[in-house]
Image (tube, rainbow, N blue to C red):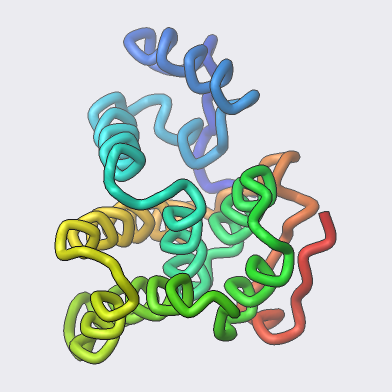
Length: 192
């Protein structure tokens, strides 16, 4: 049970009505992580802007999901792990790779593994102690511009992880098949 109201297009602040409808049309529903912001347009718009800019960067859609899953697992955010597992599945990321991310294990693709470790380390240390992962990220063929893309993605995901954990967001129906909790980290498998 969420600690706050989760809004929809009809109940959200009137300035967000059209945006809520646009999200619903694009995703098929308004995820609770956005619905809970229906009474604070400035925060809603800031989160949407962060995620929009992250999507316009130089990482592929699958690479963006790797960042978001790695950070969410690091932070123990069940809501976000479930949501990004669903999105990664829609992108046809291999189930084994999703399972590796969800259980905080190495990914089979060395480039993706460098991205996972770099993202996770940034989230864990806020940039401190990430020198080896930074160098491995660049050695895997990523650019310095993509370093900044990862930092943006980590920042956006830290925001939603904090929001989801503190406000106890319930899973959206679309995310429920991908339920996850931190204590399942080494035994979880993607079923959908």
